[in-house]
Length: 105
Image 1 (cartoon, one colour):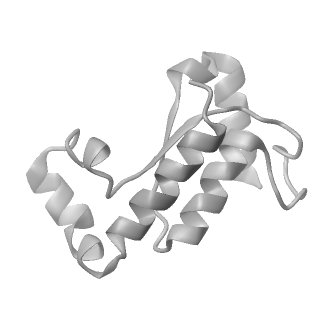
Image 2 (cartoon, rainbow, N blue to C red):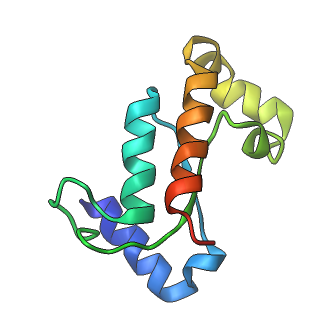
Image 3 (cartoon, rainbow, N blue to C red):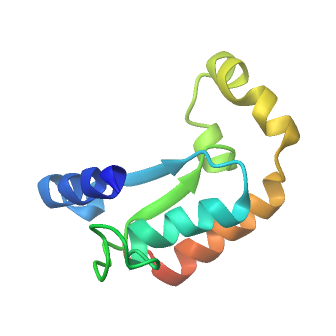
């Protein structure tokens, strides 16, 4: 709930067109839920983003567009091991689906 408040406050301060949300959840479904929350509003109706569609663009840290932005040595040190055990294609598909459905920026 606190993260939802932080995201909402940042969007109000900087504007949604200036924010990209980077996720790191281990499962595609969990990543999709987080992406939906910051894009379309909290689907659980439990947090500050209930009914608030920010339309924010979301990516997972293992997606190629984001991975390319990191220093490769740092990425390998911080994410490389995790990337080996994740269902990267499934995560990428879920994140693309969320962006296609809900992102307005």
